[in-house]
Each structure stands twice: as C-alpha cells, then as structure tokens.
Length: 374
Ligand code: ZN
Image 1 (cartoon, rainbow, N blue to C red):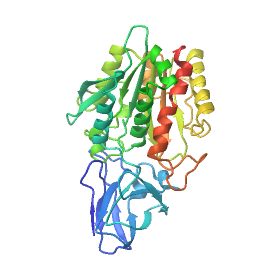
Image 2: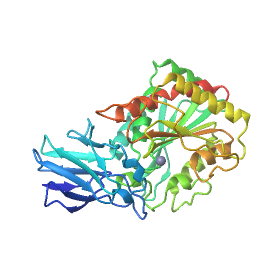
Image 3: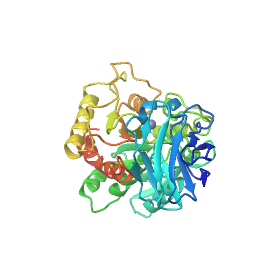
Image 4: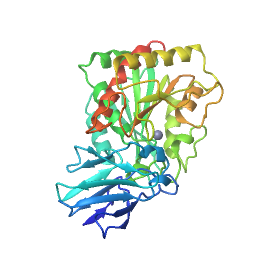
C-alpha cells in the first residue's frame, strides 16, 4: 500500500502506514505560512483493505470547528465524489474505508485543478461573448486570467466576480463554472437581459500557485490575499495588486468574491454594512439582492452568517469591504459550506461540486434585480 500527494492540489504527510487499522497522517502547512486544513491524497494497492485513517494534527488546523459534523470526500474516478462517515474527537480526525478499487482519492472537498481552470476559460473564449485577457503574473509566474463577458461600453455596468483567493476553497471554482456556463448561454433570458446592460470581468482563479501547492489560504509567498486589498504589495501579493489595477481601469459597479467557509453548514453572504460610506442606497441594493436570492434559490439563506459589522468597523483589508469602499458600490463575499447546507441536506454527497455549480448559476437572478440601480 502507498499514499501519495505529488499532484495538483495534493496535500498530506504520512507518519506511518505499517498498520492499516491505524494509518497516521498529518496535513501539511501552507507554503511559507501556518495555515492548514486542505488535504487531498491518493491511496493505491488498497482494494478490499479495511483501512482506518487518522489525521493527527486536525485540532491544530486553521478552523478546527470545521471538523464537527464534517464528512470526508472520496472518489474512485475523480468525477463522482461521495462522502464518508468521519469522526472528530477534538484532537484527531478519523475515517474508515474499505476501497472497492485498487486506487482511491480522498479530499477535503471535490478538487478543481488548474488544468480544469484552463479548460474552462478556453471553452469560454469560443463563445462570441467572451475574451480572455492576461492582466499580470502570480508569484510563481502563472498567468492571471481575466474573462471579459459582454461588450464593454461607457453606459454598461461593470460587474466583477473573483474566486479562489483562498486556494483550498475549491467550491468557488465550481460556482464560477456554473456562473460562466449560464452567463454564456445565449438561450437564457436572464443572461441575455443582463448583458444588455452589463459587462462582466471574471477572475475564475485568483490564486493558482496556492491551489497547485495544496494550500488552504496562502499564495506562494505565504500571504493570505484576502487581507491585502487596502494596499497590495506587487512582489508578495501581485494577484491582488494586478486585479486592483485593472479595477481602477474599468471601474466597478458590483463586486462578488466567491469563497467557502469551513465552519458554517450554510450558504450565506458577508457584505459592506461596516464601511464608512454605507448609506441607504447601498443598503437598499444589498437588501434587494439578498431578498431576490432568497426568493429564487432555496440553497441560499440569511440567518446563519458572520456577525454584521457595526457602522465604521469594517476591515478594509478584506476584498469585498475595500472594493465597496473604494468604488462606492455593492460588494459581496459569497460563502459556501465544506460540509452541507443544513437547510437542505444531502446524506450521500453533502454540499457538492454539482450543487456549487447550480448555486453559481442562481446568482444571475439577484444580479438582474439590482442591475438598473447599480
Ligand atoms: Zn475564503
């Protein structure tokens, strides 16, 4: 039996595999940083063995509450990822599995690789509605791919959508794929209507370096990009620097930043209530956006969320807060669960790639509802 993680977004350290009823593992820390929680590994020569896996350092992970009621994702074909019963005793994360095949993958959530990202954007550029633009290079010199959807023009509303600032939040990529599929669907009346008045600037994969390395939160310089937006450093956080530079060029009327949350088993948003310029116009936009999403998508809810910032107390280093502040616009962080949506649970798959994809498509309706008032 062998365990490996030397592939895109692989992360595990093997402590011992001598006893298949007590396979000892650790999750590796992010590049040049102390964050960790994402794992993704392959076990081979394992068919029929009743293995018991123990992740020893689970309680030291960035969000230990993320392990309560969590179920590990498993796949034999790397397409269908189902869930396994998983225990957390306050220290170690444990799961038992007898593989039906000789090679099996385990992950924190259904992965979404850099190659999938390249496939996605190149399929998208075949549409007459979409072009790819390179706006800069990451720390490890990967292209920063921006998709422009729709015809830019003075009168058009500029809508930015970014995903995967946090590399371990792969559900954000599935969300973006669902969004791109729908916005490029020329037979979808909501998309057609939106594109009459808006142009989209979409960054599907802000932090490919961190994702390929199997990180949870950091880029290749060890930086959590979502605390860099007040004044990003071109050498340590070029990913935020170049996006902000491009936003200065285009302007921003609405910004959506797509994430996953380790702890809360719900879909929710976090917005700009605490920025200095939050006023009745922004409040009305936010409330309309949330109400229409609630009315049209049962996977969205607004009860279980982060605490709303008091006036003037927003952390302007966070992307959605800074962009809302800087451009005086509606700006929203979207959070999806790693576990499940407890309002509509699925015992086999939990929150999944397919559900994230559909959730990404569902955001068009609330966008349409606020478009004229942006
Ligand atoms: Zn995040």
